[in-house]
Image (tube, rainbow, N blue to C red; front, side, top):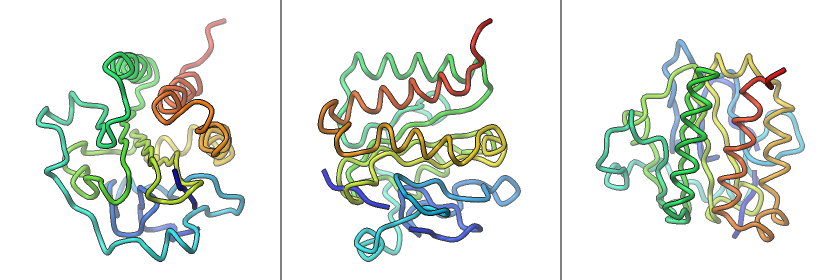
Length: 201
């Protein structure tokens, strides 16, 4: 399972840690100030030289999208790593997160370049209150497993250090090796739910 992350520029929304794959996922008036990639020590985050060098000019494969409507499909398991029970748990956690925090969470698993890419823009129609979590099982590099893109409103809710902490905790090769990709997805979503839902006093 290979995974690694370097910066793309503040004005281009990039998901899946590749420049053209999901550029401009969010509309311009809700465009995030930064793309949030997997584990990166430097400010700006982004791709490793190796992952950057092998990025395609663009991936747009709508045939990989589910047949169900995007508004009722928060999870796209292209990598086929999730069990039915895990999908049910994820769906319940996402529903609770959205109900309480009003933040939309969408999850895509992939093994780059086997991804819907640009096609998810029209499918999910992300806005300023949307988080897209992309879990890559190997195609992007050793440390580009856990990847996020946050809408502008979501960005104001959490500092950059929060996203780094989640990525460093769950996106490192030791965690993946011990827990596996599918359990890692469940754990990341649980961490996001706990992070965005206020603790009850």
